[in-house]
Amino acid sequence: MHALVTSRIDYCNGLLYGLSECEIAELQRGQNAATRLLTSSRIYDHITSVLQELHWLPVKFKIHFKILLLNIRALNGMWPPYISDLINVRKHARYSLRTLNSGTLLLRPAGKMKRYFGDRSFSVSAPTLWNALPACLRNNSSIFIFKSGIKTCLFKLAFSLKYM
Picture: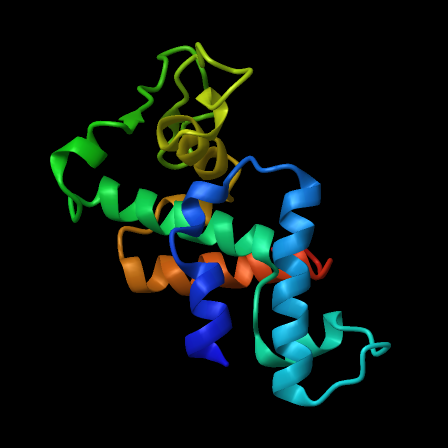
């Protein structure tokens, strides 16, 4: 099941950022069907509890996870320069006291092509998702700690558990 269905959903899913809710729902239905087939659940059983037991993120949050993971690797210099150059760290203003303890913030470029694909690009989506993270996650430089922390954060957010 994992080799056939979930790997197809996960492949390049960072490119799916910004799709409409209708298109994401189609991918989610595919994941739900795979979950039902894997666990022998009936079609009328609620799928959320099954996804929680398997520790599978819904498709929308898998997309966010992939973009954030690419982002942390780009910030740590683990990707080629053409990807790392897309991310700009925001300099703290000397008069802004709120942002001193907020961790690394990224500069979100102004999108020129908002109507089409500008807001879906990596240089816009990565800072948007990164700046929305709690400061304790943004301060981590270890990829392994960040990966488990972001998965926990997105898992809590996806299944409406108490957010951090």
